[in-house]
Image (cartoon, rainbow, N blue to C red):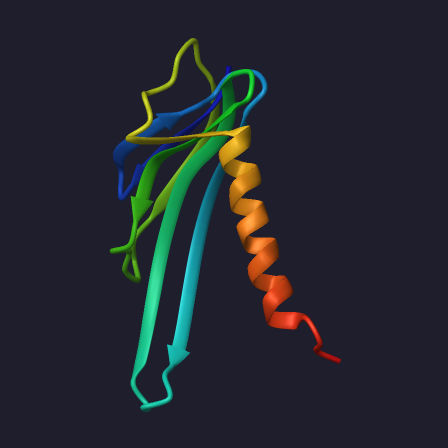
Amino acid sequence: MICFEIHRNGARLCLAGLGEGGALHAILGMVDRTRDDGATYRDLTFDVGGLHEPEPGVQAFVDWVKLCDLAVGDEITLRIVEAQEADPPAKTRRTTEEEVEAAQRQYYESMKAKFDGAT
């Protein structure tokens, strides 16, 4: 299977992979802002996760890495490799089709209430 081998500053963090029928991502982010009170802040983050269907009608969101403490000078390395098996995810959240539909309905109803009558 295709996997992402992830290192931070030379230290191996994980070997992430889902096999067939899944979606795998690695996201490096930076937010640099000045708040209304004039204070500034910077967030440097890195996430490795994915989504797959372990059984019909069930979606599983998986996370291997969630870093919120990156700093200038950190080195993140992602190598695409072929492997027989990946590391188990650090976190898994499962949802059924019914749960997804209920959440979508709730969101729809809240947006409808917000914008009904708006021009």
